[in-house]
Image (tube, rainbow, N blue to C red; front, side, top):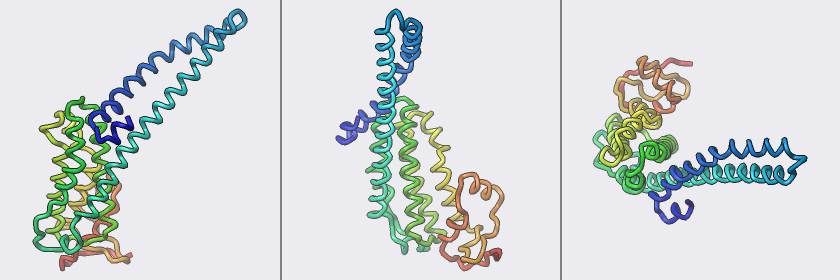
Length: 264
């Protein structure tokens, strides 16, 4: 499994991680009850056949060890895959994500930073799991979506750029490019595409885009002010998805509008 990943063979890596390991785990689980029954029987007959109890106890321990090792290996390789997505995404953002001046423009020029993300991460994963079941596709794509979007949200916060309404709308368009590449209808099953549509990372990032790009939302809150309440539906979504409203409103460039804030 690790060798397949290190060699860049994601298709084989996904098959082992999400298909073969699952199959072996299920086979081990199916055998477990018979081993326990054999152990219980040997326990009852320990005086007449002490050797059988020793054998059953040894097998029981070995099975438990194998299951523990298998579960540990699976989690370690999921971690490796997730780390690859996150680290590659961070490198691409540092190299290609436009600087602060771009996002403050009233007419941002064309940018293809998101194309780099799709070519070097998203499309590689999609092509590698396109021939598998919907369940496997979802396992791989959920990790991909989480890594890409959460890393992007962290980058937006850390860079602390200010976004004009037009800059925020450009960001929304760029994110739609990433969204559509991860939910590739030509490569993935219909079930996978539909279920990815309600993936939490996408729901969160598009609410952020709405906060940044909606002209009806107040601009930056000062350090001594609280942003006025937004419309009820948006407020509910912000709470539902665990977003800090002020944190994202503060990334809006001043629009020279008379927006209200409530003083502390």
